[in-house]
Every structure is written in structure tokens, then in C-alpha cells.
Image 1: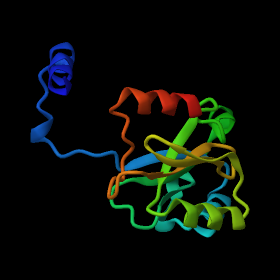
Image 2: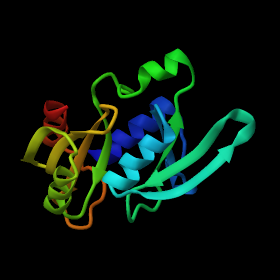
Image 3: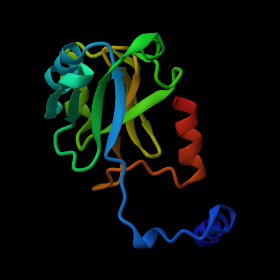
Image 4: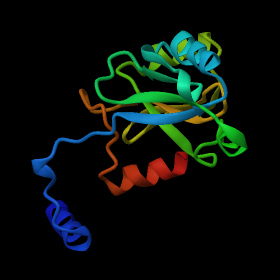
Length: 172
């Protein structure tokens, strides 16, 4: 069934052979009000690592990259809002939907640590078919899932089954 689905996608979207490329999403831009307040939250509160903080004087901005401890490929670019349109997106980059998924190898350790640091959880922990999950807000109000997947060693959501996709829609 899965092979047929992939074949249909190739027919619909082109015969692109993904086996011959090595790609990943390295950075996700998060629009912030201020670099330093964002760093206090992401590094000081969430425990992310500061990967880079490089001033770009000619543009009056900084290239600020953070990542959760142990992250190998995915990182956040903290991008200071410039102008009214970008400032209006701070805290609501996805129109109220879950924006980012912070995967962990120990849900309860991280949940209790974040609660102790004052992180606001807007949906309490619960078990779903794909893992244990709770929803928290960052300092601007963007919604995040804190999630530990049930399958050992699995660092990616398992949305390959209809029940997992249905459950995921229900908690969003």
C-alpha cells in the first residue's frame, strides 16, 4: 500500500528520485521581538545551546542560532522582527496552531524541569498512540509540543497510520 502511494505521488508530482540526494531542513526562522530576551528564554529557560551569535553590522541585525541539546541537524534561527508586518507575527507565526515539536528521550524529566522554570503549559500531558505529549508556549506565545515518542530510538513523529494522524489533529 505504501509503495503504491509513493508511486502515485511520483506520477502526480514528477519522478524525483529522493534516494539520490541528501537533504534536510537545517534552520527554521522564529521571529522574535528582541535577540537577548529570546536567548534568555531559549538558552536560559529551555536549555538550548547557543550555536552562533554573529553581528551583521551593515544590516543592523544578528545571525543567532540555537538548538536543543543533542540536536544534529535542526536548529532555530532567532530572527528579530523588522517592521510592523513582521512584528505582528511575533508569537503567532502559525495562526494559533502548534508551531514546533520539541522531541525528548525523557518526557517527565523535561516536563518537570520546564514547569519548575516557569514555562507555561496550555495542554496537560497525555498519552497518544504516538507518544506522550503536552503543549507549552514560548515567551511570545507560539505553541510547542513537548513529545516523547513511544517507539524506542524514534526521534520523529509516527504519523503514518490513520489513527496517529487523527489523534494528532485532535490535539492541535
